[in-house]
Amino acid sequence: MEKRELLYEGKAKRIYATGDQNVVWAEYKDSATALNGEKKEEIVGKGVLTNGITSLLFKKLHQAGIPSHFIEQISDTEQLVQKVTIIPLEVVTRNVVAGSLSKRLGIKEGQPLKKPIVEFYYKDDALGDPLLTGSHIQELALASVEDVQLLKQRALEVNTVLSSIFAEIGVRLIDFKLEFGKLEDGEILLADEISPDTCRLWDAETEEKLDKDVFRRDLGNLVEGYKTIYSKLGGRQYV
Ligand code: C5P
Image (tube, rainbow, N blue to C red):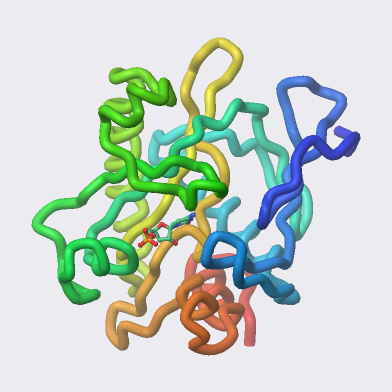
């Protein structure tokens, strides 16, 4: 498989064409962004960690019967994935109150939810990724009622599998964001990435943050927490 022209550059990844029209080449960058791109930094080694963790998690999800666009990891920072058209929705699943939910509902961070909550945000930087109701999604024609139901169901399935993967390594999955895409035949597949950039992960004993909140809130170097997650999941061991 060869790397051809750049198709798209996002905040954390570059997507290149390959010789196969159904496959694209994803390259994970070292940049970290927060506050809708207002806060930005190059963090050496981050791309290796987000690529490695995403690859491991997509493999584990596949073993648990949850398909995704992931095909294979081809280098420290690169993977081959199926070409999909991304649905412009960020699907956030929450187990514990944190981040924007804490602000919106006035509940302090750390309070477990009675049951997982799935939310949809409009993937639109200019609007600041606003929270959407089902009616907004229909008005904007972003996804059909059936597709929204399917995304919610898939998100809850992913939550069950990921929560248990993280519980086994002594980490609490607080919340996470997923993106989905459509293949040409209309099939919906889990896509994008799953890493400490897109999940809140707390050490189950100490509640230490092992995710991007370390960067968002200026709590130190995010790479340390990402290395802990990667090593505990069975990836590269850092000493
Ligand atoms: O900020 P908020 O509390 O809404 O974030 C919920 C979850 O979604 C967090 O795990 C965060 O890392 C993730 N997220 C993301 N990309 C965004 C917004 C949120 O990965 N643009």
